[in-house]
Length: 380
Image 1 (cartoon, rainbow, N blue to C red):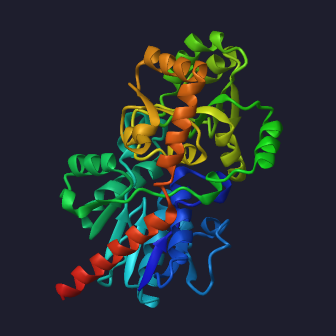
Image 2: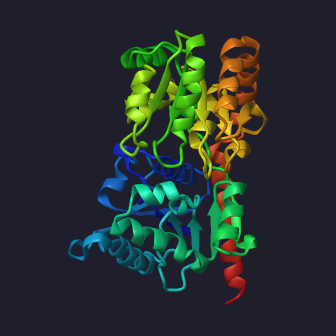
Image 3: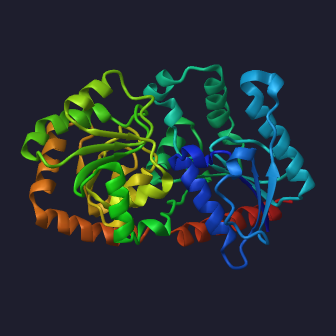
């Protein structure tokens, strides 16, 4: 089986959750014994950081932007390249990630649609460019034309079926995995990373891109009510803050929080393992990869009750109303003052984290590929 695999969401120099999932699948699929041959399709910068893939199982095909087409340069370049490579390399199936491009030539398509984040009012407000509008229209407008949609949580499946009016039987759920480096973090490495960022273990940690329905204002307000009881505990934000809500920087500075900005990807496991608790209370989350990574590292989590966050945390985290400032403050106080609570959640986290393995996700994805190809063969 030869699979054309779209890697265009992967940028090693500005890694996002989507990019991490794409890289995770590329690595896991390429290492399954008797698994598919992969034809990775992407722009030059998408291949950076993927040099560890086995060359005997992986081919690389380079897309070129159509520069004269302005805001549509990337989309048109992807469309032309995918159609050309699909035919030339005789791929059996095309796996599109985030942006759907139809390869034509009768090639079946699995569309990996993570969530409907671009329909969220906050996301629409933060990026009104023509290119963003084109990508949103393509991402969701063409979903119905794929053969199968695979998504990352039951919450996303329900949302996609309802809002895009797609038959739920055409949407499958496969939870992504967590990289092995989050399960075993060397103590010396962790100490070195924390020292470099000027942190002492036990801080409250947020990981993610601010301003994209992450609800950071509620977290700040909850910490304002809580922090006086824990003068030695810091609130730390790790991730791109360029789209943070107005006034975020001033409020964060008043509370003496640490805003790290983008952190090196290799530092993330140590930063998560060094936290006393990871907090993610987004108003909409298709999965919440930092939560799964924290569980793998044995770090207690507090999550909001929206989207897939309760699904990912399971019984291993404290769940609060995403907009309840006092509820979040109470949960932080309970965890930070109760070593028994923290120890219990850490043990539950390790158990829950073991369910998010890339080997498992890759096996499920290959089974889905085979199912689609078999169903297509029957209709010919």
